[in-house]
Image (cartoon, rainbow, N blue to C red; front, side, top):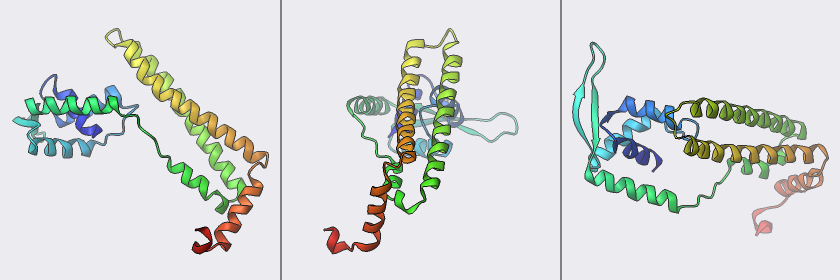
Length: 199
């Protein structure tokens, strides 16, 4: 849904071709979306099939490959507003793959788990620094809607800071041996208890 929403959102302003859309996504929302370049072209084809965008021409510069120009239709504008309202009305619950790793943590040595946690903390710290630097760069432009940009960056930063603090707390408890007895219990459970006993 997010790729469709982004494409329709940008096409409201003017006609664009796929590479321009990619550049806009990277420049404006690269820090908080993970829209792949290939997915943009796939979504454009689907949107065109559904009558939400239309191909209005082809451009070519020199020997470069030709590129198709797209514009939004009236139905596409309606779909954009429907998707936008859906996003505003939805409170997402996030499911973290990392929590599955926690469930089976007993299969790894405690030293290995600690190493992973330290690596995770390093990544989170680097990400927070990157967000801070990029926010300063973005808001330094007088044409940037500063308050709105700050709100978006703050949303991401608060999540990463919370994740960092949670990870640090998990590492501290690992080093204090808080989980040792429970990990041994889980290890025994996984090796000795059959499906009938689990039920």
